[in-house]
Length: 417
Image 1 (spheres, one colour):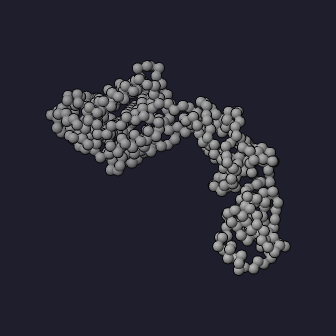
Image 2 (tube, one colour):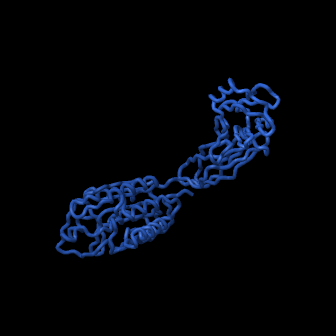
Image 3 (cartoon, rainbow, N blue to C red):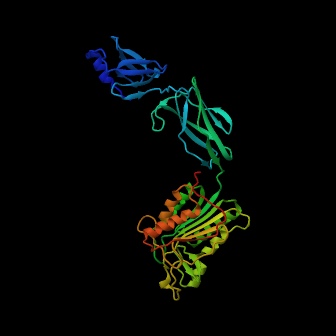
């Protein structure tokens, strides 16, 4: 709005001599009654405007609430209370929501042309829109209109929502907004990040990786059990707690994430607690936690279960203990694992290869996984396909992630529609 500062206005009222308006210098004042006045605007304040008419000698004061708009002689327009010659209100949705897992959503819309009454129709039922006043706004997307915001209660399934606004010229209505509401289904995850190994090489990033994954999964509706630098007792207890919860409750998704040292022995994969120091492969089998045991905890006892199980192993660092063993297979990385029905097993690199811990805050694999989980409406398979492509690009194909999948249903972790 083109304001004349109060100080300038007061100074001019004392010192300036107003000259009659001349052709070409006139401003045009439109009142909310749609009356048009050709005037010379002299002073503009937040609550009032003062002008001089072409034939008048003094200043005329008009409240801002009575003004629709002013078009100044230089072409600039100030809209105070918009009106439109077409008359009836025009409505545009500012919200773009098609899916919700919560029973209520807040919707916004812009209503132009001076609404006197606004109603909202939800699944055929009309209700008034609660608003203190219809105040004209100038925000982008609703300049010169009335912006409203309304909390809407949804029923399960598809919801059809319309806004209806009316004034003396008639009624206008919005397009129908359709929102699918599904109750949020329960999800659970066990997230482990082991960095500070007492024997063997320490790792820089698993702690950071696990904490970042925990935070991301929490935001996606997971109940997260987190363990950082878990010793043997802590890790086994966490796996038992996780398994008990998975088997006793109805979860949509059960997810296990591990970052740290992992070793394969005789074709089986073992995850390393931070406090063990096995001197042989036989000791490792007893002291470490077998990945197959965790998979067994996640497997559905009911063959009709609709749960999706996900195992993510960013654990293919090289064998940290092979030099201390009297006999070592010398095999790098992890072994391939078969996925039971309804399960996806993901590896940060292909079997027999080692993965990079990374020079940054997170490993290359987990860094790209965090980004992919942010992308809305990606299917589960597409998330890990995206991660694989990006990790291959970042590592110049030194690290090639892979998955073994026997999924039986579609799953979208970050759903917006």
